[in-house]
Length: 52
Image (cartoon, rainbow, N blue to C red; front, side):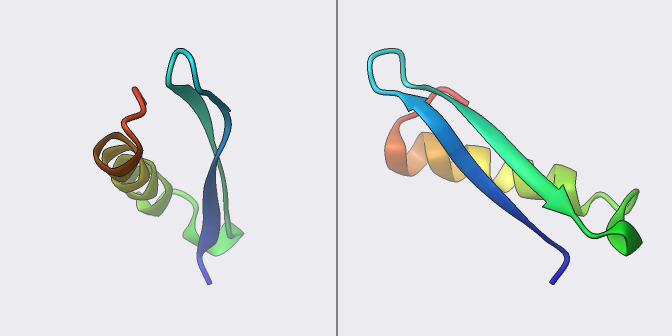
């Protein structure tokens, strides 16, 4: 496993949220975390209607 990512503190009125992640030491600097944030943001907009 390279890491984990989640969405939390979703404000249902403003549709704003926070994204948190952890990445394993050996994967730091590889772009995995950046790509994970891009992907989860895209899905959160598409599926949940969040602003991201």
